[in-house]
Length: 380
Image (tube, rainbow, N blue to C red):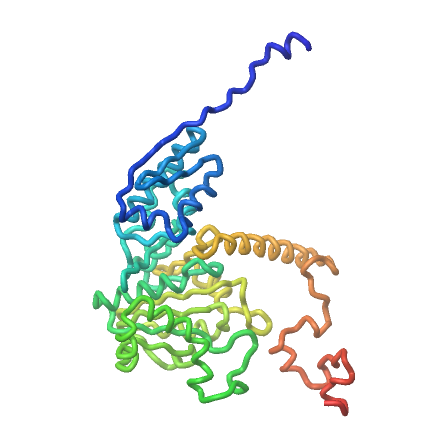
């Protein structure tokens, strides 16, 4: 062995250290979570750290730096539990990211927006905190981001808070009643039966944030109104907190109609995901309004991303994967490379959605690939 190689020092291996902390019995039950799920999530967040629980003592063992980071996270989680905050597995990586940025998760989570039946609604990421602050500071706020980022849920929580504080006299929740090319006229039942499934998510969120026995009374009195977007036409909405959900499925004309309903003493929050447009031709009022109103005073556009997803951690990775795919597809389409990944062949009606095919004359529609089942044949 050459002398110079023999003289090189061997990299030092960081010795394991242990750090123990005591947790009172009540907080420990909440800290562990069902089937120790929360502490197992801490172990996954810091794979080099072993977490051992004996009675009311939590012991962290591993490399010194990793143990110090895990200890800071556990201390913060214990403090959150003692303050009465609900903690889920998705809060662990979020809290770790905030701590790594030398900030406290409690500063991001803040005080609850609303509380009902022992559960609190509060922002859980920096993006959500900025979104909630924007709602407080602006008359019209747009919340744009992927599924699971809490756009609608937080907006509704702010609406309930404003009603409870008597800042407004009513809440109006609305969304487009037609999605994915479906037409209400072809659905069974009365008009109420037809539009109810589209509005059901808003009812569900209301029942989570308010006393379920109180919600029907508020609906009957008109204090809370849940209605399809078409019902907003011709109205002036004064002293109201108005939330438009699924705004990516509004046409430019519908978006203009909705925004011009704004009356005195009112706030509006518009939420949507511009990557999930179901409209024929893919022309979205939400996409257009970001260019038209970007510089208008007292209007704010809050953009949330995969880091703000508060559902299963896999949802954030799914959002990232689709974002990469969409960017590649747009790049291929801009470069006019036929046959590339994600590029639909031109002139082929198979690429059209149901609403677009329904609008074409019968002779232009694609014949069924199965002649025996073709609606224009004899075998039906």
